[in-house]
Image 1 (cartoon, rainbow, N blue to C red):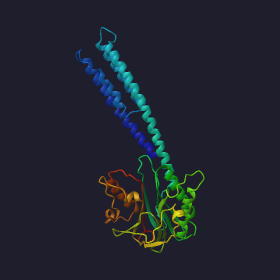
Image 2: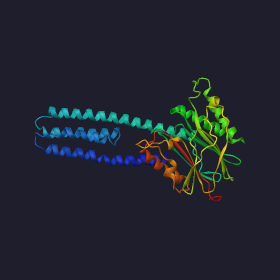
Image 3: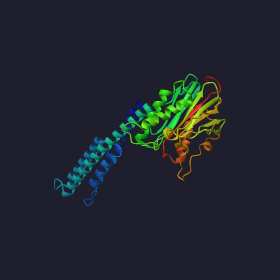
Image 4: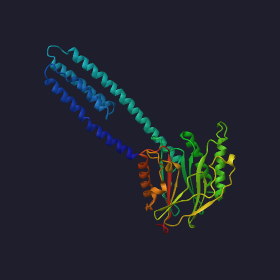
Length: 371
């Protein structure tokens, strides 16, 4: 909030400084018009002053500059028409300035109202993100953690991608997933799965039992009264992992989700699941049996979990983002620094704008306790 107020103060000060430009324009046009030959009229150029002000000022500032322009045009008319109070030409110019100035004031009022609405939307979106997609702590037991969420929609901060973590008696449980679809329905489905994970992850259940419970939670939601039949149409890809604090092997169940990547000494290894399961929400159709895969996660390694918004991001030529190829040789062990570099590289690849949401989690197991 303090940063927003500081930014607002800076913008206000900048706006006050720019007011000198239209005022100087009014003075220059007025002086030149008064000194010009009788057949030359520069008064119509005064309309540029409120038009320029509208690009940086609010309704009051625009109204003030427009009033000054009207006063200047009146003075010009009185000084140039010594035989008459105001000629018909100058009266028409004054009327035009009043009309244009009033129109610009109305435009600024509507623009500022729209800006306030967008600010409120961003605020609500950020609040929803903090509630639904809580930021991961910097430390999870011995692990150093960083997370990144890139929303495809310019005014949104949250979509259907999700992640969460929970501490257990033996280590850390993580989930990263992606809801099929977009919009508020996807956000609701993501919130449902995250709530089920947070409620059950602390229990002393096996990884297979946890995933079975999560799949049932998604399926039950599709059968709630008032819901349209979305069986087979709505599902959530996910990877659920158990990362022990001491043992170096990670257990995971992959439900139709992109595989994790382990980066060791700058060499990435994609961990493909030997027993992949269907996405969550299809349990009533597929009736899967969940098998646990495992892979090593040694001290000094960096574990990267992501959604398909990363690997399916396309450059202007339609080429997918080659994650493993791009991160080869990256030796950053600090998760925050690694994700900062990944974000910059990903946005550069796509030309600055993603077509789909993307979520990434980076976890580093220090080489020594407390490192």
